[in-house]
Length: 113
Image (cartoon, rainbow, N blue to C red; front, top):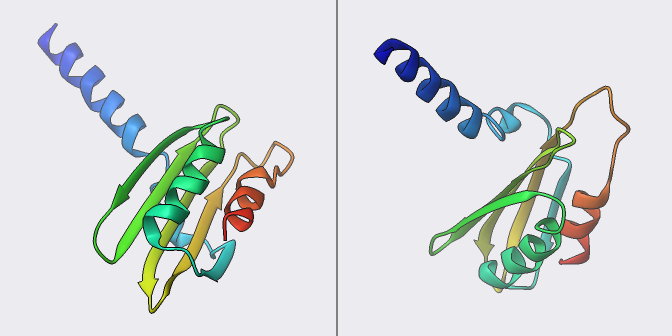
């Protein structure tokens, strides 16, 4: 019984961590610059993505990340790095190849620039 519980716990942890794992292995879907500061840009994107996905964010002094996973199998990651008076924005994504591409996440990231 203890073994079963340990296996179930490990599986749950791997599932939770696996959403955006490996996105850096794919080419960036967007590379751009914004004049907004990091917290302002991240909050704009977070608000839009949160309408359709589970979103998590982190912010440090010179960088921030935002990741999202939805029920359709989309995994999104935005990394923002301070650059002078604004920030550099990189977006990575992966999707279930069996489903039609939905540009809503990328469109939201672009609209916040």
